[in-house]
Length: 289
Image (cartoon, rainbow, N blue to C red; front, side, top):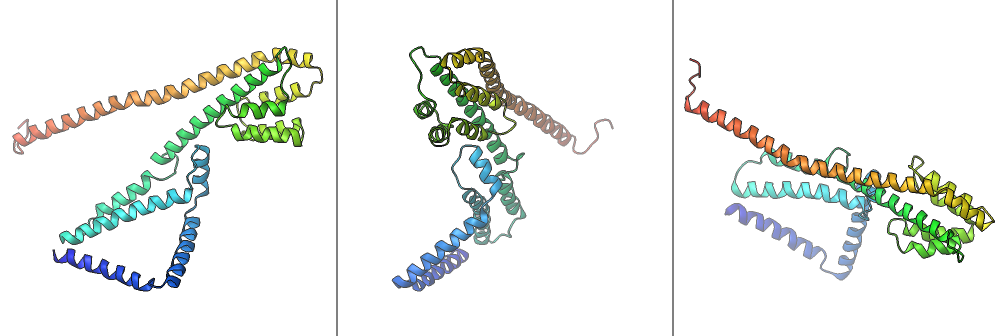
């Protein structure tokens, strides 16, 4: 009880000193301004460019600095709470509390083979699959638009009109529409395809189809060309379908394996407990003596 009262007294003195320090409005404004500057500086120091890229690729809008600050704050708060509890109970500080804090930092680390890193990599892969799916849907809509018998919508207007139907490539399509008007269709298509990685599975095919179709002056010739390229578009759709379900299959396999692993570990644990129970019943006497 004495330790609890001592801790409350110390916290009260700190709080009272803070109130006296910022009692005037001028000091309070200066203090808040200085605190805001220090907080911003701390956020910049905590910024992790690699983590920020992982968050961006995963479709998350959270700042990497906030994630890093949360990681270290959680570990520090845990250590402080445990230290305060040990102080109130008059027991020595346990090294295991530090190990738990290190475990918190490890679990929330963005490294690829740790839980948070694995989760972000999984979300990134999921985002890529969905983005590729939207790209295929876009080229399908483009094909249907150019093959219309009663005329088709111009490329820039078509991109702006279809952008609202997508989520991951919406902003890119809006900008593609603007660039098609300002810079020309060819440069706009090159810019749009450049937004995807160089080793992308089918972006080069999409680029070739768009450039070739938009570069033809004869609409009939362009329509015939698109009909010929329909097999390539169908193959792209088929490959994307297989990739999507392969990804879902991998996740399902992991989920299905977890109960088997848990059952195996439970059997091993029961076997060890059984062995220890038998050994205890013999009171240290060997089984074969």
